[in-house]
Length: 129
Image (cartoon, rainbow, N blue to C red; front, side, top):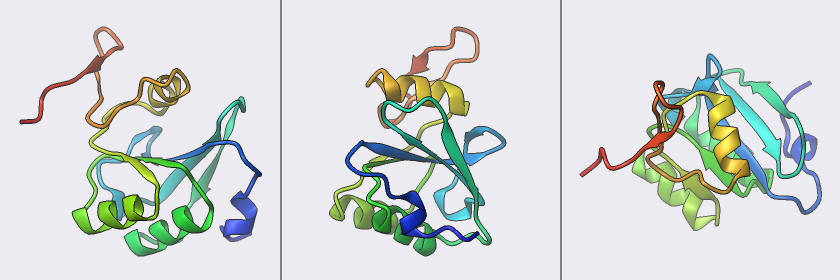
């Protein structure tokens, strides 16, 4: 079954897409082969394997599926601007394991630039100028 916007729609609750690679936030949005979708208030989520890397197709999936937020590592400014123009919150420059990211998102604490500190499990901020 292909990934279509109708497959991903689910009325009203805020939903998040995380660009992943090996159960971690993928370093680059435009090279994503896998995404993880989760809905606010739901226990689990859904992993989608993408047929090819394409930032444009990924943007189309995000906008067409009424996703509220996207978590990624690096993202080109063109795609960042497009998604924010379409009212999608882009939480970029995030580095860390998927479960940590989901926990911070559910707690309302996930912010752009969050980096997992493998020693303490907390976010390290302030590394960017």
